[in-house]
Image 1 (cartoon, rainbow, N blue to C red):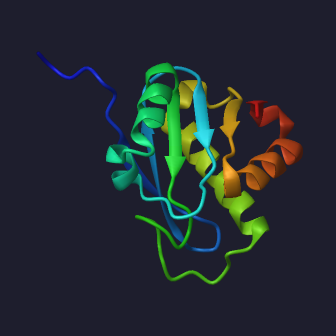
Image 2: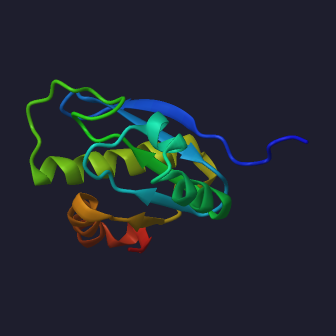
Length: 136
């Protein structure tokens, strides 16, 4: 019997200030982007008893995109700017990279999920670019 669960594909992007961010996608459908929260790690979360049931559920229902914030996980650790405006810019750049990964869906707005520290960047992006966000 084969495992039919979605698998994640990990990619990297370079932010406008030169930081390398790791991001992953799994599943199909409307794009749901989870804003990074404190101490992420894409590979460890995939198997984590805390996060894996959420990741698998969301990947079964959406094209689920998430990323390691700057300074954490598989992203660059030595970074200068850890401020709120930079977190929002990073989220925007992940959304743009995810749009580019699926050219046919590039014009479609995304669903944003902001948990804990990820809530403020998600709200900021939704306010600044409401046309890019269908749900928050």
